[in-house]
Image 1: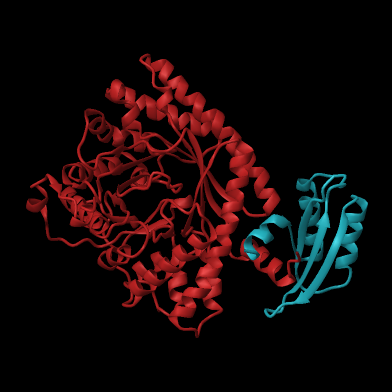
Image 2 (image 1 turned 30 degrees about the vertical axis):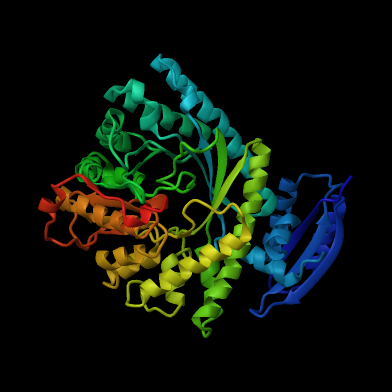
Amino acid sequence: MERELLFITVIGEDKKGIVAKISNFLYKKDINIEDINQRIMGDGYFVMTMLVDIKNSTIPMEKITRELEKIGKALELRVQLQHENIFKMMHRV
Amino acid sequence: MTISVEEVYETASMTLYQNLDIRTTTLGINLKDCIHSDFKVFRKNVYDKIFSNAVKLVEQARILEMKYGIPIANKRISITPVSLIMESHCAKNKFIQMAQTLDQAAADAGIDFIGGFGALVQKGLTKSDRMLIDVLPDVLSKTDRVCSFLNVGSNVAGLNLDAVNLLGGMLKQTAEKSKNAIGCAKFVVFVNAPEDNPFMAGAFHGVGEGDITLNVGISGPGVVKNVVAQNRECDLTQLSEVIKRTVFKITRAGELVGRELAAALSIPFGIVDISLASTTAAGDSVANVIEAFGIEKIGAHGSTLAVALLMDAVKKGGAMASGNVGGLSGTFIPVSEDEGMIDAVQKGALGLDKLEALTAVCSVGLDMFAIPGDVPEETINAIIADELAIGIINNKTTAVRVIPVPGKKAGSLVKFGGLLGTAPVMKVNPFSAKDFLKRGGRLPAPVTSMRN
């Protein structure tokens, strides 16, 4: 089965436990993390991006989004899940 | 291929903070094959074809919203111009019943607007076209979702002044019959109307189109404003470049969603219309983009140059991004739907005359503006005719969506609510062109039409 890659974007204030909480959730749902990056942007925001493969996920994308939103709310962060195609279309000619 | 954190952040920010959305996914549906001599069967055919396709559109759009994290703000339907399919059922009550059928099909499928209750009359009016204009005050005031258009001129036909002369009276009646004159917000009069425009109220499924087509409208004034605000010092050439680059990206997003949606519905993908279109949401304003250029308030001298630059950069960025750019593609400047426009009118920066000048370089025309209810119908016709003359002579689409509000004077405020916003009632020139318009007839097509 082909990989199905999505980006998780986490935006907000840096704090302890962000990576732990999200990766723990992903592990439980059999979602594989392919890549992680993080940076403090020029505007002062902490931004973390995770490239994940959901081909073996035990829950559908809709549910992953809802669960991630819950985690984001608890940590006071914005969390967004988007299929990688949109980034390819927008940023690569 | 790797995507950098900055790139992911840029895209995510557009939807999270800058109101980027797919403004509309509009399914164009041909209704010519629904025509039947038995009017009951005809209506049932129309209902069934619209409902079955619209339900699928709503469902698939929801799935794609989730996949890409981009809101699809509106799901809409455009249909074959109704006067065409009603030629052999040309009776007032039948027109009204057909409008009710369209309204019902849209409501049952969860569609907010269905466009195409209109006619193409650039050269002349058929019996059915006249009947359609006749029933419009009832249709626009008694249905919730049905939108109407008329195309009254084109580069090759000229301007049909006889058709324009029917509109002031029609609009005043519509205004009287509907709360806050809201019915008028669902009617647009055009010249050079595109047959694949996905934006309401003027969308229709042109006679040159296939059976069913999906057209997508993408917007994003908030995104453009953000990039302009980050480039306060650059010159006009560079400003144009940064806008082009941003518009390129958002157009590509529209193309991606449009193509996937069309594939999921097993129908051909039509066009992506990249039009900066304001909404009443804070920060989603085209006027704010112009102000970020360095203009104190839209309407100030310098605004026409600014809109021209914005419009051209949007078109160039869109054209580079997709081979399917169509519709109106450019910039809308509706008054009631844009907080910056409303503010400019209230502060006296923007009047009807400057608004008309701006429309000479923007993509549509005089849009969503209110005037006092006691403006004579001939003056409304003259406002429409002036705007449309700009389109005919300059080889472009222009349109008018005017709302004469009964009992209101210039300076008062009319709240429409929802997507339609709040309109400050604008002052109208009190002098008359009555005797000129009374001449009727047709403005000959401009010399640019003789290219064959």
